[in-house]
Image (tube, rainbow, N blue to C red; front, side, top):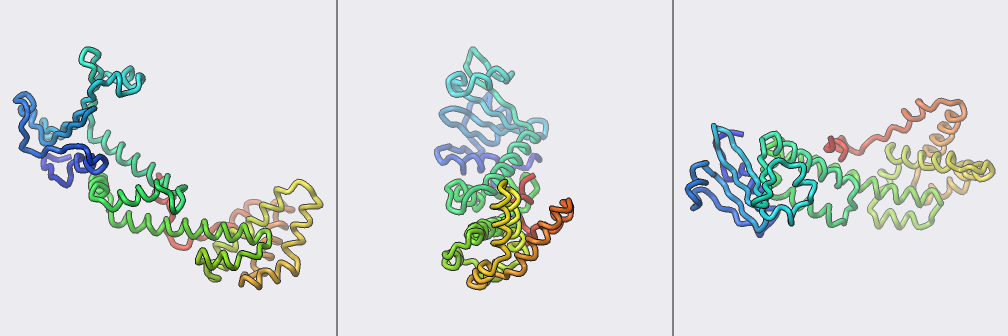
Length: 286
């Protein structure tokens, strides 16, 4: 951090965004003389803690003082922290620039990891995306030398890919059982024939058939599954939903043949899923 601290770069802009009840005081502030001597440039006070941002020897120092620490914090926090004062019942934590970097990097990683599993309509996902549209997100990205706009665009594209993949999985589960409602499901989920017949989805669908076959322990049932994939009924079913049955059948039979001959590495290569675009949520999770 540098000595030139602006309102936009301050960590307290981020704090106030998370909790609207926090009262932020900007410099100059009227405080005790003892605090003024430490060159306080920002001060945030809540019912439970006081956060101060000061400059000392050309370095920014962030300190958190927790009030009534024994009643508001877990016991193991107090035992493991040297900053706990039993007489005043306060816990003082000093934050270095490296500490703040780790905190915000960990927060971004955790949020992006959560987005990887959160459903499209989940409240967690909506909360994270809402935060990403605020100035606080820009502050964090600027501090970590990240381009906030590029990160937003890439993440939104990755989420769209994930959503489409989930919808395709729903369709594929119906195809496995020759579900007659698949065509209407495609309309509801806005899945096109092009997406259904993409190399990405043909691989996923074929892999689903293979998994179903190989996991079946009863040889008679396993043979029935294999016959189902190669049946005229399946071909007619695929025709009714505009699915390329030959692509699926050839992929499944080829893989089953390689399983019988032990060519497992080649199978893994054959079923390498091709993404719709270069962005995937995993790209944002370190």
